[in-house]
Amino acid sequence: MLLIGVNRSPYTRRVAITLKAYGLAFEQSDLSGFGNRSEVRAANPLGRIPALVLDNGEALVDSAAIIDHLDEIVGRERALTPPAGAERRAVLRVAALMMGACDKGLHAAYERNHHPPEKVHQPWIDDCMAQMKQALAAVEAKVEPGQGYLLLGRLTQADITAFIAERLARGLKVDTPTEMPRLHAHCRKLLEQEAFRSTEP
Ligand SMILES: N[C@@H](CCC(=O)N[C@@H](CS)C(=O)NCC(=O)O)C(=O)O
Image (cartoon, rainbow, N blue to C red; front, side, top):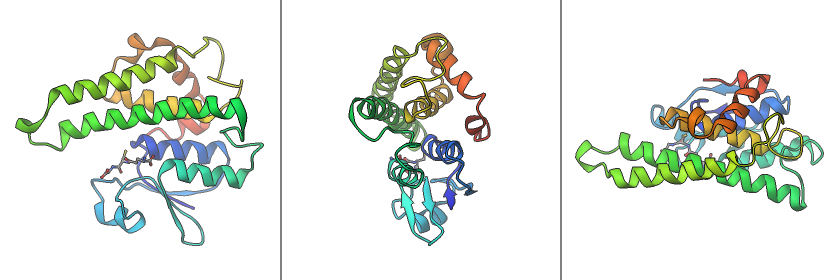
């Protein structure tokens, strides 16, 4: 399998961490959505990373669809999203909040970085960042200090998505050690695991 994308992208890193956590072998092509437009568009017509090219040449796009496939490969017992019921809903809720937080953070970054300065609308940036922070604060409230994982006493997509969203927030100058100290500490602890550490950009 070939993972297309740089781990600076939270979505790509989510897939990279998941692949490593599942112990699935893969190669990675460090392409960025903006820096390597034609190569990325060859794998994903939408021009976004990540894409995952399977050994038969099929290209999967969007981190959620890619992870859905990886969950199928490893089977429902090992999948980092539980197969059904309240446990599944709880993990999906955190994952949706955290992926949405990433989306809002990137909307803010794109507004700042992809518009001429006189066209940047600061209230939109502020609103996006406020939404990102509120979602992070909701997950901060779920962190039980001393517990290794957010939910179910084991690694789930709740942890992985919280990790990549907290990382992105820090990159966008959110002071998570002060504003979300438990979440920040939780993510630092996750970084001790190989799947998280080895995917550091
Ligand atoms: N929902 C998608 C989002 C992917 C995404 O927005 N990737 C960004 C990089 S962080 C990208 O490629 N942006 C380039 C673009 O939108 O043109 C996913 O979960 O994979």
